[in-house]
Length: 96
Image 1 (cartoon, rainbow, N blue to C red):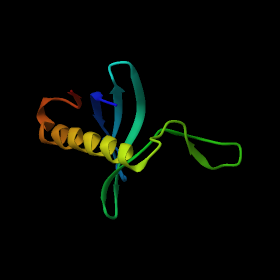
Image 2: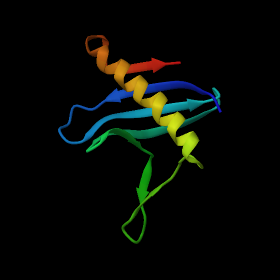
Image 3: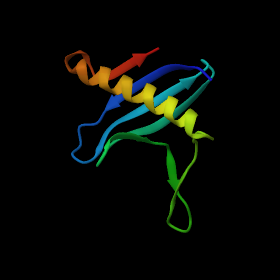
């Protein structure tokens, strides 16, 4: 699986969420609404989710194994850091 595009939209709200990201895979499939969150141990990603009938949130798209999750998280956080460094140039980053 090749991550062919990462688009970062930094948030301006106060709180732990730092950005919302869209990722394109193989120039064929996109996943929207991945969140970059500031946790106690640093930044991490949260996959898109929705609230179920029982009140719990369930991911609607997610990696199947930890190696894929780590690859995805590393690419997203790298794009987020680049977007932070480019603060004056706009809030969206197209990272290929």
